[in-house]
Image (cartoon, rainbow, N blue to C red; front, side, top):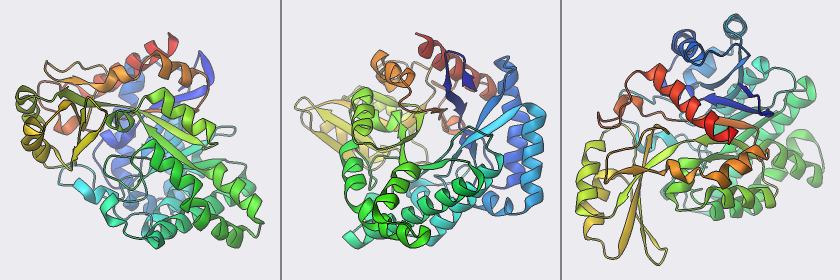
Length: 398
């Protein structure tokens, strides 16, 4: 939805909370669950959509009749899609995902083709004068990248996306941009790493590819890269790095890097104690990767690749003060002590940056509904999503 306080801001929730891999399953979730959220919020103005389309669904949408079916659904319910979560390529629910969520990575032609298909669908559905954002994996899982050539290979494929999105804009007037989403233990993890990639390997690999595909000079190619490739800023992931959200947003803006989308989300946190480890045991589950980051008083951070290893390791690690876990919990939920969430990292300074227009797209992203333990499970999914909207809207107004 467009926010009445600032018409340039669009708010949605990410449909990756709804299980499904085919276009028919995505369609059914929109027709049933999303209409329920719309009704719970009593929204009568156009209601923005943050779609999640798997590679299977994206391929099905190459059929024009399927695209038209979506357009008719959106028109019927006064929906307008403006963003797509293009991070999970394949299965995302009801079975182990773990590190496979990063595959195929940006070295792969499959990731490129999938993203181009998402761009084609979004450009078809996007209203006039509304930008379209697509979020994607942060290049790759960190341990998979072993050479500079790996980095340049990712950059070349991202250049191909920028070239195609530039073509779409020239032909249709629809502006699309892709946001790389920094995430724990990935090639892009911290703000500093992301800034370095955008200043180094990304233009080195992408600019020649854009020049080749769009037949433009290097300066114009760099302009197109900056216009169509940016960052998806997930507040859970930034908080996991113990970074200040507002400071990170300002760093991207100062560097001239597009903020494609801000995902509003919260991680678990607890004191680094045996009691905290015991409380976290109920969050062990086999579907998603739940990276663990623990900080010492001197600011250094120790990491574990998943929650079971973290629970075993952090109680005996010396000097740790706080532990944060990559487990998205609803923004409005306050876990029982000693657990808490990083929702308080979305502070007044952060919301001031949001209201200033640092990024036009806001997306609530709590995808773990099916694996939340009883302690923090809010009950009905539709009402939970609506409550997250209310939580966000209250803070934007302030």
